[in-house]
Length: 255
Ligand SMILES: C[S@@+](CC[C@H](N)C(=O)[O-])C[C@H]1O[C@@H](n2cnc3c(N)ncnc32)[C@H](O)[C@@H]1O
Image 1: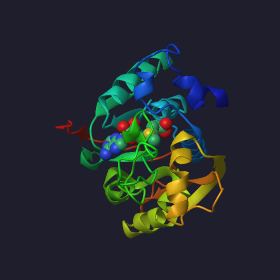
Image 2: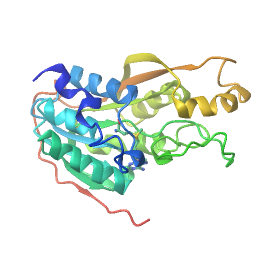
Image 3: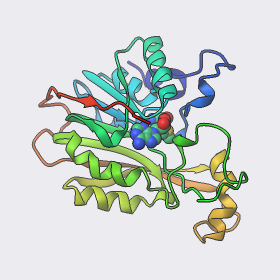
Image 4: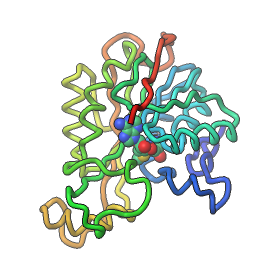
């Protein structure tokens, strides 16, 4: 196993530049890489892993490549599920990819990962702020926490004792609030890594709106993304022991 073998861009590259499905799925970016790096740092050898909001499946495939014993991936987008299943097959790894909402997934895992939608989103339909593309992958309500809040509330019920949650998002969705919410759920949570990256197309489109709300220094076009690790109380905290078979299921989307 080499570092490049879990590099997300290489794992989930579209079959062809014109692959129409790829345009409907969030392809791996720097937040994906930060999550995979934090996961690698944590170690998943022999672990059961749940990747919520899997998108292209890059993180789930990386977990399998890093030696996880069992990988489940969930996304609310049927296009993402199709794309992730094909990606896992091409990568030659076993990932159980399911269609569903993270709020309704049931089971217990050694490691849960998530790169959720987290971009603050204006509640007006002005096309200046809204790009074409899979907006379900980034639009996250006025404060960027529409998915993060239910996610942080749900995660303690998805971890075995000593299990770890690895989360990434940007400063614009308030990383301290995530740490607080995870601690309120009984987890030991801390920021373990961060990177400053240039704005991508979505943040560039929203920059003026963020400036007007006083959330962005005028002219600033970089953001800090963070990786948070939150560990459940219990005695399997090394990440290498007490692998627990989980009885899990994902309720199907009804809408
Ligand atoms: C930022 S993308 C992350 C993709 C991938 N994990 C990565 O790191 O590149 C967020 C994904 O979350 C999915 N999503 C949004 N809300 C969801 C929910 N409530 N339950 C499950 N998946 C959801 C979207 O369909 C999208 O694929």
